[in-house]
Length: 115
Image (cartoon, rainbow, N blue to C red; front, side):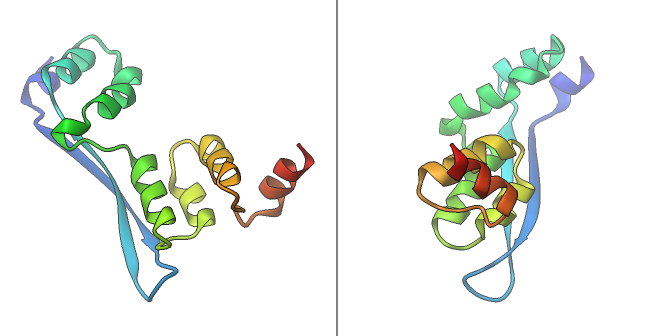
């Protein structure tokens, strides 16, 4: 109960090596605690928070996987790095393959080619 009323926002980040130039870039997830999210925390339905983040884009919210995909699409990080750092590797691997790319790991790319 206390957490749901005192929390304002949460940001988490992962650092990824860049492939376009030397250095690292942060992939992040951002959550603004809206009344709906506060209610999910109070009712212990935290498994539904990802869905609330997706619908809360107007508040600046963003899922980690969406931001990592954006960095990959811009050529800033590798597919393999994105898969290593994302929360849903299976979904992201499939997304890379649907886009015509390869993850860079034989076991994942060969499984896709076999299908």
